[in-house]
Length: 209
Image (spheres, rainbow, N blue to C red):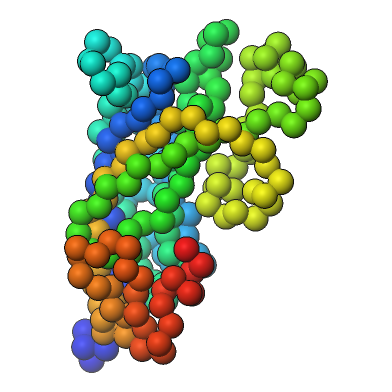
């Protein structure tokens, strides 16, 4: 009976952080973590990690290549709090200190299959001129105490940010038992389609994507 009437569904996520494009910076590495709602539980895989340091080298595209693997499986009872991937890119400044070069986040794709996401990255900016001067003087620029705030959005409207760079991420998504719980994930060739539920509401309405 447990097999025919599951109480949870599974979301398997694997893929890789392929690389980045930061025209003004080199020798960068990337930290990642997953942010998810209280009804979600990781069952296998890693929730966070850090890539190797990579350089642009002599390639004509000047793209930074990591090809760092992602592999995690979640179980949940409802789509609310759908997982997000949060990235933080770091690299050396002119004084040799590691400073943040960009934050970015994206929801895990809502449909099975292969997906590619290009994440625009941003950094917090000092609000006052004095803060800008001291940041430059001490070689430390503003950064978030907890990068997960990037995925939450609460309080972000008062943060001044500056866009810089992009990171490319490839996902391979597998889902299990969603239809048995009344959720229709749609065809794999429609990555933007939200889930339809038996109540007539979409996952997009539940999770405010």
